[in-house]
Image (cartoon, rainbow, N blue to C red):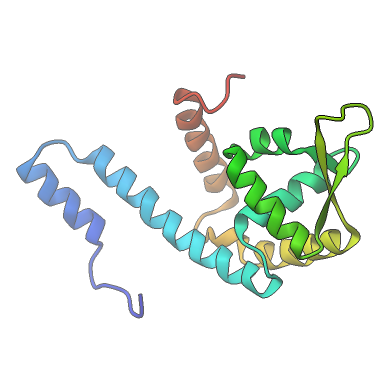
Length: 166
């Protein structure tokens, strides 16, 4: 979008919804979340693009960096990233093609393949992390406390839908 609108289109939609359909608070909240997701996605994509990464590939590199042995089974990566196995395979294929990870045999389970971050992957992850943290992951306009409150609220929604159980 090249220039800001002179009004809030989501607030306007909420007014019309309220007048024609009924209570609008949930519709306005969801529409706002979807719009903010677009804003954040655009900002993060812009920060990661110079590093040859998408957010999904970046998340995979971060996950491997957090792993004790800097490697994980692909199944575990899928669980932690909450992705379908096909998506994990595609992410790993691309990262491997770029030399950022490598597939290695599991030392004790011949049926399992581990994905291990390479030194080049570590460097790229570090550079990409600087890029996304410099823009606060695209989440601007909130104080630190408000960001924590937002995280808490979104966590409640994720838990209520069965995203996790603890």
